[in-house]
Image: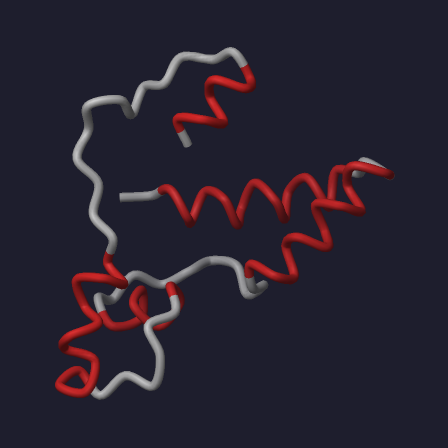
Length: 89
């Protein structure tokens, strides 16, 4: 994120903030939690955080590429919804 902010010439408002890699923290407890994988969607379900969009991150990459070549309100709404879920809380 810091590098991306630098490239885009915008302020890095996350500088100095502590981050938490849930994958790394939960990995030792994977079998105890009885989780097949530690994908973001599964961790969200574990902690009771329901997503409002149904598309995966890989599907969103395709929609984003389509949006870049042919912008539309419907694609913009999908992208905003997906990213809003990613940054909540």
